[in-house]
Image 1 (cartoon, protein in one colour):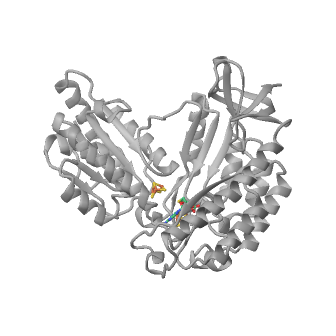
Image 2: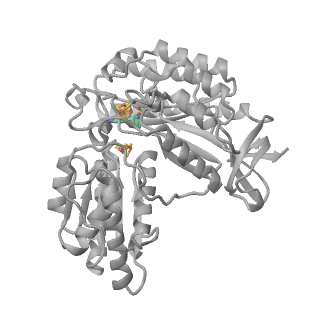
Image 3: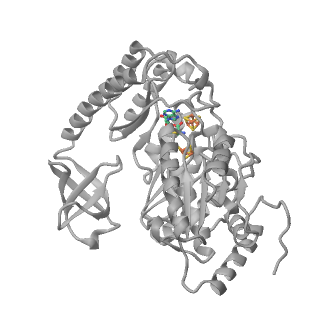
Length: 468
Ligand code: SAH
Ligand code: SF4
Ligand code: F3S
């Protein structure tokens, strides 16, 4: 067997050696195949990382399961974006103590954005002695090495160094679905929005090579995937500073040119880097869904400046108008933060005004959560949590009214949907439009994975329609 070199962490080659050693160990020492359970918190980037983690676990000989009580290996892939996300992880980690007592041979691992923070890593080291492996976002491909060390050295493993590697290719993958799949085109973030922890825990932006992305899309299409979502914290800055000179719009065209009946989605787009070129490209590429998630965060120019977002409401609204001119059927969604430090009720009302002006199809709304180490964490924040809660409810009501009105507008219209699975009622299947609306219609499983034209007929607690 090949020798393992020290500190050669920059690719998968060394990991393959650890991987085969663990596999050999499991095959010779375990009477039944051990089970692994991976729980994922946070954004799609994390969901995608977990697919690679599952890929590595399966290659090491584990079977996958969904229940921590059944598992011999439990891994939490964590998120640090808001306090609530972290609190859930601590709670669930506490519950694993009993599992470990019942099954002392089990391995417990925790990874991802939350543990990339040194203080969190320390807390786990001290207060959760039954956690065996802790590794940050820059070490995710090194799971085989960590499992190997846990089994053979019988020592706890902590690896959260900030040393970034270039993009790591060829990590095994076990995809969650067979119809819709994630495809990261870049990692990290350079934007440092003042409220956000992501750039600190994910490191700087690195784009994957266009050839690697194209290769993966082709593989997915050949496997039968019908919808591919390109992922990045800011896909609009894809390729910046890379020698290949392919920007995001060009990449979309290259993917659009790949043969096959599939659709392309992407997220997230930062408004500061969203260009008319990109919107023209979306309009011209028939495989790209006319759906744009463009996080606005706030409708107050003063707050946008404090957030370090590098656009104002005028630029934002221009993008919306341009997108709608080029793609009248486009659906728009956004992220909004309520209660950023120093935000006044007047600022908040500016956000409401923008929401009424733009009329998003859907909205993801968050109450500001203080993240230590970010610039906003030391800004004056005089408004109480209770007051912010009231504003938040007011915002939800405004958006609810808009969404209801939007929904009424779709009755009688025909949409092309991808049939994704069974509907809520017997004898009904569910399909999703480009704009992420779910429509249910009569049919059976033979429709799964097909694109269908469905006319919306009524709105009960779900949208119902008939196949044309
Ligand atoms: N890269 C994406 C967003 C990633 S985080 C982008 O720039 O659009 C997803 C959303 O979480 C953000 O858009 C923001 O609305 C919200 N968010 C991030 N940090 C937050 C914080 N500290 N408190 C509350 N919401 C936050
Ligand atoms: Fe966070 Fe801003 Fe980067 Fe998005 S663009 S991940 S909000 S710093
Ligand atoms: Fe959370 Fe990390 Fe994503 S902090 S939102 S899982 S990039």
